[in-house]
Image 1 (tube, rainbow over the protein chains, first blue to last red):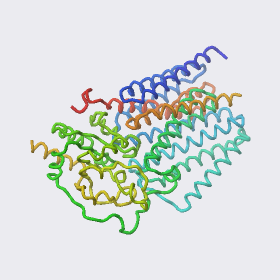
Image 2 (image 1 turned 180 degrees about the vertical axis):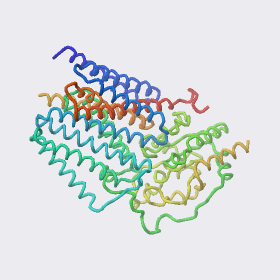
Image 3 (image 1 turned 45 degrees about the vertical axis):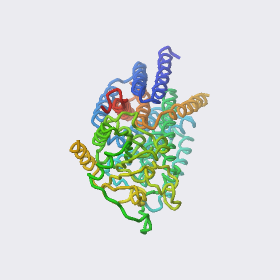
Image 4 (image 1 turned 120 degrees about the vertical axis):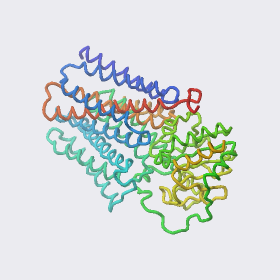
Length: 459
Length: 97
């Protein structure tokens, strides 16, 4: 063991420590930014010491770093905050394919693999490939380049099941005689790319928070498996951290929808609009900008409840402006955020932070619900299923049991909505027909601008 | 034995990951995702190390491609996370007013 090899590996230990410290500092918004910098420095350290390894061909390395770095920087600084979910999906996919290519390259150079290395090499290629093509589909759905609703095809479970079995058999077969089975490795890569598509395409838009979290976890596990292939601890540790992170987020998202992971992945939820008109019926009470203004003007406390519609309408800045006006009027203002609101975990928090809403005004679901009775007005902006009281009361509802923000318990609810069309779950919302609900129809951004005009005119 | 040692490291890291991540508040879940994503770009280390002088042709092609993708992941991931975290402010830090 040469001394430079030892030095490099000690540096990796320090890097791993910095990743861990960085993640630990993400536990509070006050330290999070420094944590991210520490994590980035850890990465830089690992990269720099690796460059000191002997016998490297620098021309390809520099070429790769320059191209990748340029694309990464441009993407990171040009992306709109509302487009963050598709950005993360894209980056996830790139991480996956990098691990796949690394394993392939390793196998190409050293085809004499032991059974164990053969298995982890094909695992890394498989998980990496699924992460890549799955993320590309998720990216397409989130950016609406392909239809975001669940796309079902005949025999979907049978096909996906068969693919998995074939992949498993191919892995075992490959690992038994790795050096003479190059075609099997290529086959595994192809199967993985196909499986990523067939497994993500049946999942609908509003279930994307789960899918992105899961793909996040895969990208970590792929890096981890690649670490086994090249016997590198830092890849294993970093990959495992990311894998664990993705798994936890996946679990939180599933719990916030009261659905199992299997249900999210396989049920094609939201593909079929529930037939029949026996949903909640009743009289809806539309309100004009002036009506809403008088309600808000008289309120002591107002909670905004944003959903994906806020992101679509790009209404985060006007919402904050309205919130500021209310505060100047002596009203207590909060922003209540459901864990699965939007298209990825924490999506709404980022948008509101972008609009300069201080994070101490962002309230989690479990904190707002106990004191909902004392809230004067809830303003629901582009959210639907996450505020549907049927989740609490209607045992026949497809979202029964899902924890919701219980806006219906506030004294008055104002729902900003384009039309009466149902939400992602395809069910009509009983909230819209309740006694204390006023519907304020129109584009979220234009509606809020009208309210701001009322406030400014009134003062 | 090597396999056992690596698996040992893997198992410990998974448990550590669970402990760390469950402490992250939901308000920071998006930066957590993009930040952990950047960490998964650690593959870059392996990709760099695979580009050795004695490798050329297809192996060099695969390695270079891996470096490109992993670098996008690392650079883009950390930069976008930093951009997001920069926006999270407390009230007295000049947030709303």
